[in-house]
Image 1 (tube, rainbow over the protein chains, first blue to last red):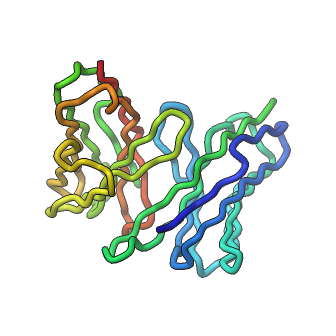
Image 2: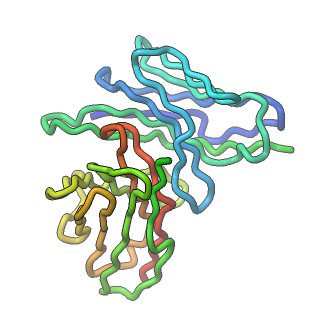
Length: 116
Length: 115
């Protein structure tokens, strides 16, 4: 099955700096890669996603890049603000063998802290 | 758009009782809903996939008789934790797929504490 690794586990940056979180995946059949932001005690919120037919996608201060050959994708947050502090999860959608279903496999999460 | 609600947000129950958690897609129809479990400071683990009008598909290691899932309509799925034990205490989160099974929108989660 799919295996998603995420680094770093914790990241502390100064307000205004950029933050980069990286993920690798193992299943070449994965074709959809969402990123979620989870604040304490809340459910994950979809912040950006990318499909395998594009290499980069940007939404204001957030961007995601995908390298299918190397099987890795990254989240970039520019001009970070204290309210960006949260846990971020990457995920990959891949088929589940012999079932015809697809499922998201999540990374282990990155705790981002933006220091004011 | 793409709002998913869960009820209750937190519940405390005695060991041996059953607890039902509701997941609703408020502004879209979801043919597929998912149930996850999350332990403190850990990632989300998929428990089961729920399809409207059919039986849920459980992930390996998840007891289907303990975690009963019903997807009665395109906007409602329920998870019932039967005969709850302290080790079932966790954060349970549902999600709903809108544009197919890939894009999932998550509910706010339910904190279950079994005494």
